[in-house]
Image 1 (tube, rainbow, N blue to C red):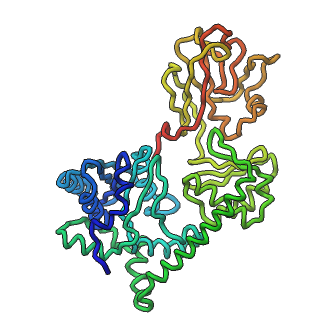
Image 2: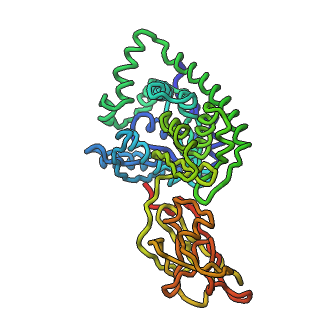
Image 3: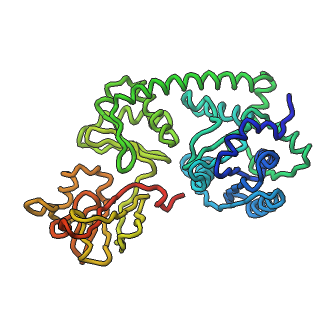
Length: 447
C-alpha cells in the first residue's frame, strides 16, 4: 500500500486555492491532525483556519481545546473554537453531538468557502455498514459523499481513499502527537461497537471485507443516481413552488405516482434542500397518513431537521422544527431588518405611495395574534375578524400565529406584507414603506 503524503492532496489544489477561505475541522485526533499538517505543506498557512468544536462531554475537553490552539499556533494556522451544549435527543448522544458540530461548521461557512474533514476509508466502510444496520436507502448505503453543500459553502472529504493505518504511519513518520479521546474506546456507542467488536470478527472470517463493502457501496451509489434521475423527472410535473417558508409540491400530482416513486421523490426532494432525510418509518407515515388525510385536516410529519405538512392541495417541506407562537411585542424603527422568532425577519423598503404611511409614528410596534383582532384592509367595504382574513388570504395555518402585526399608536396598521389597513395607506405623493416578511434562518437564535 502506497504511503500517504501531502502529495495526495494535489488534485484538490486548484479547488483549495480558488476558495476565499479554507476551514479544517480539527478535533486534535489522529485523522484531523494529519489532514491539517499535510494541508500546511501544500496550502499557505495564512489561508487555513482550523475549527475546533468543544462538546464539553469529557473532563479533558477544555485541555484539548487549548492543546489544539497551541498546535495551530506552532503551524501558523488560524484557529477558532466554539463550545456547544449537547443535549441527547431521541437519536442518542452521538447524533446530538454530530448535529451540534455540523451546525457550528455551517454557521462559519460563507459563500464559496470550504470545510475539509478527515474522514477516511475505514470511516467510509464503517458508515456503510452502520447505515445497513439502520435500514438505510441506497443513497445512505453509498456512504459519505466526497463533497456536498454545507451552509453557504461546501464540505470536502479528501481522505476517503486513505486508510487509518496510512494516516497513522504518516503521523509517526512526521513525529506528530494527537489526542486520544477516551470515548473512542467506549463500545456503548454504536460506531465504536462496530469498530472494536464487530469488524475484527468480520475480518477474521472475510479479510477482504473492506473491498467487498466498498463494492456494494459503489453499486448503491449507481442505483441512487438512477433513482435521483427518476425523481428529477417526476419533479418536473409536480409544480414545485418556493414558499415564504420552505417549498411545496402539487398534492394531486404527487399522489398520482406509485407509492415507490412517491417515497423516492420525497427522499430526493428533501436531500436536494440540504436537509437530513428522515428514516423509512417517517417516509411511510407521509404515504400512509399525510397524503391521504382529509382536505380539512392539518397533518404533520416532523423530524429533527424539518417538517412535512399539507394545505390547500399542496405538500409543504419546511426546514427546522415547529415554531412556538410569539407572545411579546417588539419596537421597530423600520430601518434595520427586525429578527423575529423562529428565523423569520421583517424588513422595510422605502418608497412613495401605496405602502404604509411613515408620517404617523416614529417607531412601530410589532405584535402577534392573541385572538379577537379585527381590521379593515384598505379598499374593502368593512372590517372583519383577522382570523377570517388570514384564511381569505390563504396564509398557511402554521404561519397564522407567527405573522407580525404592525401597530401604530395602539391601532392595527398592517398585517406583515399581506395588506395595509384602511387609514394607514400612503397617498401617491407620500413617503411610505413596503414590508417584507420572510424566513431568514440566519436571523434565528439557532443551535
